[in-house]
Length: 424
Image (cartoon, rainbow, N blue to C red; front, side, top):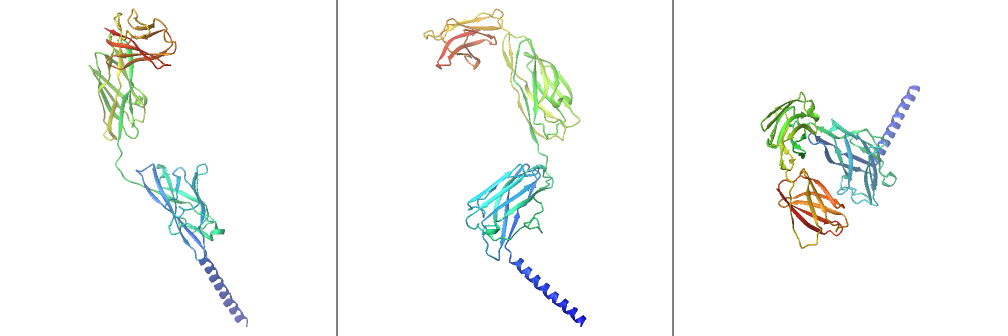
């Protein structure tokens, strides 16, 4: 009797367990489930920084009635590798919702998407929304996101569970972080860059010394270690007294060769020269002249000698060098340009040394601020300044030629062409 009782108990227990298993399985089969999938992309290593649009797709399994009419979805991200910056709803299931927003909360590194509609979303469209993200070169292998909230308004939608298939085995209790961007290592030819050689404009007096600064920029990732810079100078105007390496080139070894009108600077470094502005200072002395002349470094050429360099080409922007001569004359031929106009009488006087010009108004007919302008007849503006004084003294920096003085009344905007003068 006892053995039979035990057999009966085991048999009854099996029946009860089987019944409850079938019941639970049936209940699970009756749950409304929203399945989410976050698009994953492979980013080429030669594409950084990369902006890419990612889709979030979904499918509904609803054995019971449901009304999927909105959601609040949030996920955090690895800010050093990926940053979502914008959400898109056009062309998605959320397009016709009454409320649809997407915001990046940079302080907490969280992207938030909120959608609410008065009717069911367009469940024939399986794209829930899109977002654009910037992916950085620090990607290294992959960039992770971690969903922190997926609220599908279960009380009114009838959706029981949310499953993100990127993080299998988890439901809406919590989700594991997972990757949405992977690095594709691409073997590629090194990218070559252009260099630019430039100099500042220089103005100097005759019989004086000045420095021409030479710049070689855009050195980043060009792997420049050795080279030579060559140019020519007008030896009737300038002589070179020294060449000094500066900036990142200060640590290079240089050899300077100055033969006649030719300059050559050879430079070498044990390691690649890093980005810098100024490269060399060329110290020049202007010869004694009585006229003003404009010259420049001519036929410039930069050649990179180490064969593993990544230089595509070199562009040159060498600006003019002005040498102002010391005039020996102190005579001036002054003629009225428009003698019939009631313009102020102007007197122009050279100093005895010939290096100053004084412009003097003989009567103060203009009581407001005046602008004095001096033009060369066949050239452009050589001097302009505002003054309310009756006398202005300027350094004499005029070569032989014909000039005229214009005086403009800043209040009435009237211009008086008062005098022109000839420098011989």
